[in-house]
Length: 408
Ligand SMILES: [Zn+2]
Image (cartoon, rainbow, N blue to C red; front, side, top):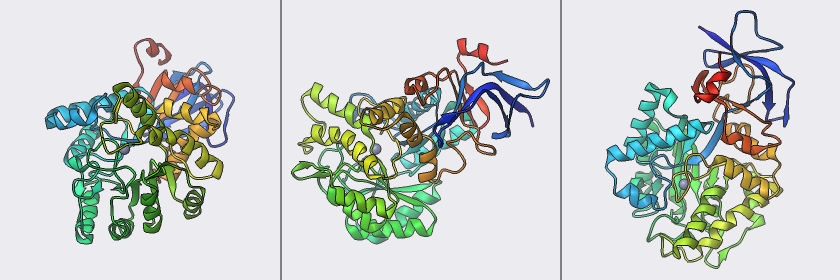
């Protein structure tokens, strides 16, 4: 049972939005064991030299098995299972090197996800903690059907929910509308029938698991509300007439305590790629650019209305790599979030709203998922891009050659 001390670090208290004077933080058995003025004599120390110790970041929406290149669907469909796993492992390494210590996967081939998680349990230094839904539930040939559970009856929904939870996944994902990545689906259309969504929520909640719904179409958001899901992914407000934010529905989401995950950066990069290529990967997504760019103004409005917001990038989708979370936070900042509010969406708020347990804060007894930063992230979110050191569950997992000088 060895203890290591961070010496002379300013602790970033994300919940309070402030940093402390230089102090010492002890880590033992994967947890934050003590916070004191200085380490005891002869303690093993990591020299902070006045740097900033912040919680590791949480990306609330990723797809490990998509490559995040210009054509992620083609890459996925054209790859062997071995190559798909290699892509996921590469994504995991990039995330951890970027200071992202927890990722929530929102849709993957279930068997490969189980394999990835087994590999990360054997070699935790190769990637972040993973929370996953396994295969998402979708209508036959619906969005993400290529690795989804295709369901059309309540009996199929019940079986699929139980299968994904028994497979070791923590939550259930419903594909409630079409998606930009999948031809022959329409983001403006609600895709999963109300009784199927309600059945999924009933079965999952009875098992103590949360339900997230992928919703672009406004109608799909209304169905998610009625079904009582816990989180709405994208929450895009798309109608047949294009993008239109609906304050009344947003306020109903707030009253119901439903969390929104606006996934801005993946959308902006997908929009940029559509402009460059001159067309969408999905010909049915006629107003794709307006729909995608609307996610930025949606995030601003959700904040103004006081909804629970978590930061997710949709990493894996078009042109969106596993190091994109800081760009998500900068996008929030560009539309009125303070740096502290943006950072909370990727740390303490994400942990609380998604029930991820004792992580997302530098706090006594909590999980030691930490990043050591050159600057104060409450003044400079950019500093999050280059952590001097990343610790996952009490273990230093990233400290590059030049950064190694920090550690004794
Ligand atoms: Zn997604």
